[in-house]
Amino acid sequence: MSLFSKDNGFLGVDIGAYGIKLVQLNKAKGRPQLWTYGIADGAIDIHLPDFSDKSPEQLSQEGKMLGSNTLSTKDGEKKDTPLMYGESDPRVDRYAEILTRLMKEARVTTTFATASIPVSHVFHTIVTLPKVEKESEIHTYINAELKKVLIRPLEEMQVVHQKIPSTNKDEKYMRVLVTAAPKTLVAFYSAIFQKAGLELRELETEAFAIERSLVGKETATMMVVDVGAERTNFFIMDKGLPMTHRSIQVGGDNIDTVLSNVLGVDPTLVDVMKGDVGMISWDEKTLSVFDVVLDPILKEVQYSFDLFLSQSGNEGKRPEKIVLTGGSSVFPPLQKRLEQTFDMRVFVGDPWARIVYQQELKPLLSELGPRMSVSLGLALRNIIE
Image (cartoon, rainbow, N blue to C red):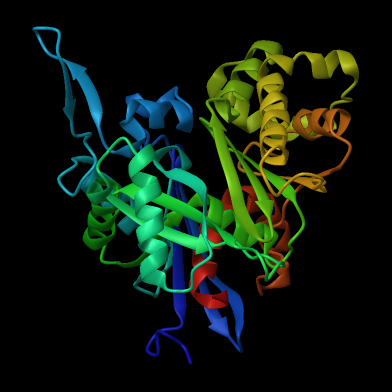
């Protein structure tokens, strides 16, 4: 029985550093069917300056990822002050206006929405607990563990968890995937959607949305590399769950800068010319020009794999593939360098693979696919779960 009996449409909204992407899926005969989609291109300051050049680990250590900002007072003392996020954030009206206009242009017909929180704003960890059945006991153990590692008080955080499946029924312990986000950030997104006339049903991390659109029911160990405009995110998927995530401030903007210098053109024209680079013969000399951008990505992939495989319970696992997504994932040198460095299959993921749509749209949707993985995964949440 459908949770939403009056409306079978579900909207996924991805607010990123370079615009807003949305997808509406309708449920037809039990399958997700594309109803409409839309993209509002343009720089969006969703990442405050405090977040732009730091990894999630650095932000966590400083407390900034978890809803605080440390400032120095005149007498040299350190003082915690709230970040701008919250329902009174001046960006709420601006984002809501862009979203409202985009929904009108795309002819969205539903009011039910799911949105994503940027990876860099979220605390994500795996907690090992004594094996218990009652949810109340799981909550108690998780809260006790989080109080040890969170910078901000637990009361200021929205916490969700998910059990990690295990095949050993005799185990005395269980592993739980825990995600925590500042309540001020939740209030910020809720205010945007309320002003846009939408009912925000769920708010989740990009990791789970990408898992839903690109991994599905597959349980193999793999990595998804999401190359955005400002940042590249790295997710290791195992047993159909995002087990780790890391992020570095290298993305499409850096690739554009190198292309601009190599081609000797104005940076504003690079996007127009990107389609032609696929016809270039990518020999070693040509590839090496982009190593300044690609090396940090390759090193982070290796580090993430090493970190995951060194964790208890992961010894002996063999990652099978690297799936690319994000607007700059189609840049040929990235796939070529990954294939040269890692002994596994590397390819650009297709988030439309589980979606019913008109076949004449396939060429356009294939081109847009890497940019829509998050919004599609968000829209799928209430259809396949």
